[in-house]
Image 1 (cartoon, helix red, strand yellow):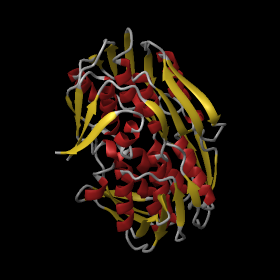
Image 2 (cartoon, one colour):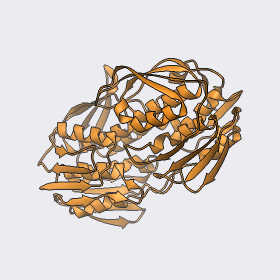
Image 3 (cartoon, rainbow, N blue to C red):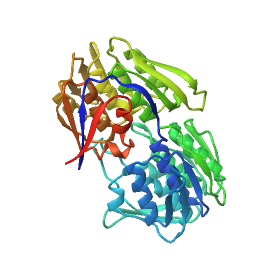
Image 4 (cartoon, rainbow, N blue to C red):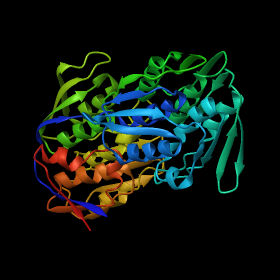
Length: 431
């Protein structure tokens, strides 16, 4: 098992390029189940989550391979439509595996999906996924072994409400929207997720021949078609990776140029960073709907703020841990509230081991800024908490050892290599 050894005290300087979006890639790969033609996806990073979903697709009769001439391009082709089991040993490793459910039911008429269960960031039920598919005509039941069996003829379009207790669901929207592309008549999704990753999925599906409109708004309209074809598509930049590098630059009082950054996907992030005292300046490209380059730097002090995570276009829960780590060094008291995953604070105790002063109160954490953090052995609990601990190690006095970094490999392609190129001192060690 690997760990990262982080030597603190270096200001990050230089250039870094953001990878394609993991959270856009996963449902796009799953959507390839709905055509027998080859699809080509560009800008795909080498991440554990993508490898795992590719393995699951392989068991579902899909050939997924890296292009020989471009290591960041995947070629995807269905070879066997007789398979429909997403088994527990694969699904338990990654909750996003559930995104194969809608495409399987729509194209093959049946699916046997292992329930993913909970995870370190809290309970994440799939009732909205099932509610939407059932409304379109799918029948489902729980079978032995914790599997959900779904069957359907051709699905039929409906007007659906997909709002949940903590807002819209990205994966439920992805599942239902994908399935609706092959349904009879028209499907309307109310309270749809508005995230850029849903827009990217809709754009890919439209290239395949779907008829989707309204993506990016809470009301999505899908006119069903008989068949979908292959498509070629380039993933949007990963806004969470971009935000992580922005926070890293701000925490270390450095100056970093971030390329392939789509600022119109990050307005809540940049607005809050500017309140903290971080300057984010566009230097090239980056018009509406396009990626460009930005320079990120910080003044002499970080200011305390209050921030609440919300579904897009609010501040993303996937940057909550990283921002919280930054606020540990801000002047004054901050309050960080997570309304998407109220239990997503397992990193609080680990940051406390590094000298942070934090107090959890329900779905919020009160952060009392300190003058410095100190290096310590810490344990990662989930993907984004891992990143937060690495960032804290960059500014801590001494050495920080971050264990369980298999979490961070799910969403960042060798994050230590990108940070080291900016002047960080991070070593990956196998224990």
